[in-house]
Image 1 (tube, rainbow, N blue to C red):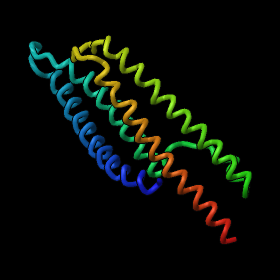
Image 2 (image 1 turned 30 degrees about the horizontal axis):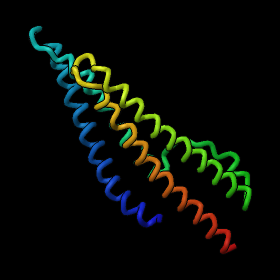
Image 3 (image 1 turned 180 degrees about the horizontal axis):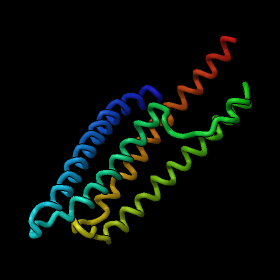
Image 4 (image 1 turned 90 degrees about the vertical axis):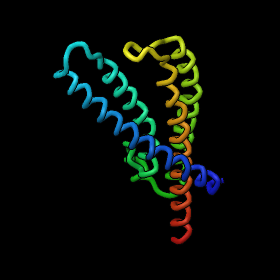
Length: 166
């Protein structure tokens, strides 16, 4: 199963990294336009640049969450796992893993309600449904979930393998 997830992850990682590059590039261009717009004649309306850059940042964060999980860059408290050894450490890691997976699944499920509500809201400057902006939430969380499961499965396997050698 992990091999299948890793194949899916290759595609997800490519999409996420491309998404990060595109959204960051767009943010730079939009903010540059905003800055230049202050010196242009008053009849140019560039109010949309601020809002669209904010939306691009949201998309970038949700793409980046999975990439950060792949590289183990998320903040964590590991005081207990550093003190515990053997079976008690494995139990704690598995319980924390189950809690995190349940949280991500619930968040993914709840994000669909947010998308539905977002269809009723219109953004101020771009006049588009907010559901377009919120659409990244379940995608980013699902990618994060896959990265999390694969990362922790590898961690658990390496812990088991190192104990078997001892």
